[in-house]
Amino acid sequence: MRRRIVILTVLSAVLAISLFGIPLAAGVAHYYMADERSELTRFATEATVTVSAGQLAGSDPAELPATEPGVQLAVYDRAGRRIGGHGPARADAAVRGALHGAPVSGHYGSDLVVTVPVANNEHVTGAIRAAAGKTFVYRRVARTWLLMLYVACAAVLVTALLARRQARRLAVPLEEMSAIAGRLGDGDFSVRARPSGIPEIDSTGASLSTTAERLGALLARERAFSADASHQLRTPLTGLRLRLETMLDGSGGPREEGITQAMAEADRLQRTIDDLLSLARDAPRHVEPLDLDGLLEEVRETWHADLARQGRPLRIRVAPDLPATHASTAAVRQILHVLLDNAGRHGSGTVTVNVRDAGEALAIDVVDEGPEIERPADELFRRRAAAAGHGIGLAMARSLAEAEGGRLRLARPSPPTFTVLFPGA
Image (cartoon, rainbow, N blue to C red):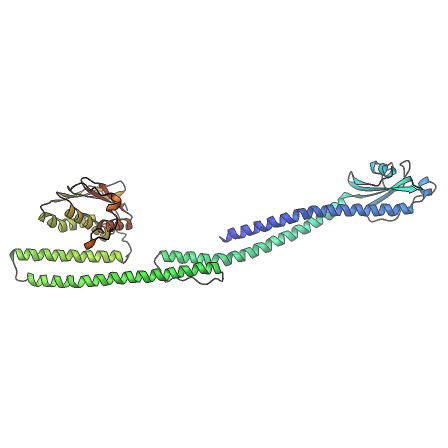
């Protein structure tokens, strides 16, 4: 940003100086040329006063006034012969024009020439020729142009220094706000923007600071709610487990089996709470590959008995050479819990969990033999505020999958097949 500001400012200064300086340089050259022509005209006019008729007739030697260095004066008679001074021996075009009664000025070869007629009783009796080399004028023009170039370079240099200072004044607070936004995106809500003295940037910084403060307060409230909910749920679960353990002592038969199953349910509910709490706290993702074997064994132990009570078998099929993935175990466990719970509640027949390689991705299919799903996929995964907590399971499962870089979709409506994909490690 700083470099762009400096470059644009310097280019603007160069453009402005060029638009002003180039016409000025042309005007200077024209002025010096006109000034030299005026000086030659003055010398030639003064010489007409000092030249007498006798000198033009050739009876007296011609004497011309002194001039500046580099200026040549010459006097010519009516026939065009030079009778004094320095110049061509015979009249040139400029002298011939003056002998016809009209002053002449112009460029002839490498000289700037001015000629004026000498009149006696309204008759042209001769001509005065004043000449100066154009090199002298060009040198004056070059010196002036060089001075203008030095001044222009100095102006561009001062502009660049001022632009650099202003660019730093503008860029530093913007760079700080960029760093603040990055830290805010990383979860640091304590960042605050410092005043810079620039009203527009300070307004943006104040808005960013307010946003960070509000997000920090909101996150603190959400985390407090998660912790409070976890505490409030864990306490009755602990009491339930203690009562079940008390009932289990000295018991036997079917009652013992029922209590054991109830304790297993309590353990599963406790694990679910721990998983959700971990995900709600936005804990850093694990870099270790997913323990797929352990997770599938846990699924088998948890859901085999539940489905068996409905007379429905559970089959788990695992393909060989599966790609590793870094998805969170807690997230995958909760996704499978939602899909298997839906299969148990709304499906029928055999429930199959198929784990396969989907081409640099790990795919897990949950299939049952229930009726065809007629609801559109978009509506199926949309969170709904239904009673008794219904209508949020699939939406939560899709959010967990996307948070792990994966995707959950309805692969086939009949038989109902849900597929969750996780990218390979």
